[in-house]
Image (cartoon, rainbow, N blue to C red; front, side, top):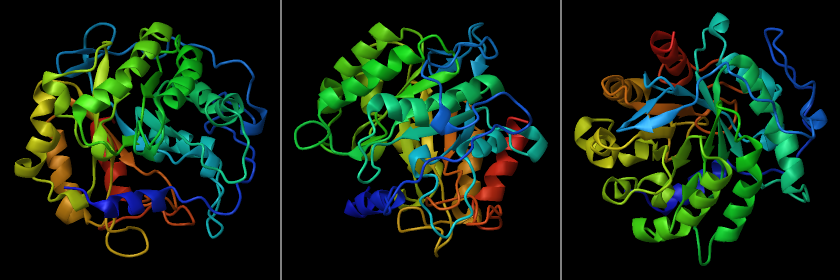
Length: 359
């Protein structure tokens, strides 16, 4: 259903401009403890907390440590390394975004946030260790302090294997990250954001299974979010041929260019599979035609967002994070000055949706 347009559009979402400025002071709102600045990130990993229960999978559900069903619902941030790239935007620290998105006092009720981890800054020799210390550790600690879940997302939008991202590179990332947060129940691992080609579940499983094996050896308990080929739209392969390792939730990414948000279209994509395996929509979003959308994400609240909500509300076993809690990565929820986009735009709708469910 997706075309080459998806590749260019997704790349435009992650477009890197001329430079990456250092992150400014990053202080959590609500006087909650947090790092003073991402540039002053601690050398050691964040500390564990008992504020949230460990999560696991049981049948097609995510459950807590007592076996109670849990539905994770929230928003996806942009990659922290790109937070200050928009020259026409009013910048705000990433910690402020996370604090806002999880703050009931400001009307937001996310119980999970998704944090993309990229390596796309220009002229940048930042090591993996420094990247994690500056752009992940502070926000993992913030999630612990806030008592919410956070998805550490290896945010590649590329082919995998021969001609694409080498398996060794993915292993290197997770061999460092997996043990770093292995004792923190707040942290979920999304092993590969959007592998594209080959369009084969069998080839994808052969490529990613050794990575998962390594993650499980280093982090036995953290929930794993598993993408699939063609921009994470091929999770049906897991129904009869799941990835080994346990506590794995299968990811789907959904946008208006894939068709109407009706059961007739969504059931074969992921809805039928979600009756048998755990499913997580870790990306979806829309905005009307214009500067806040592109050919992949062009849609309206009344025509696409509202029907999608009806579909997902009837299926609380499906978890989700909406894309993107930002003011310039499309489809954004805010304008450049951090005014929430309403009407046929997605921002106000998703805020109210989260408040009515998670609230």
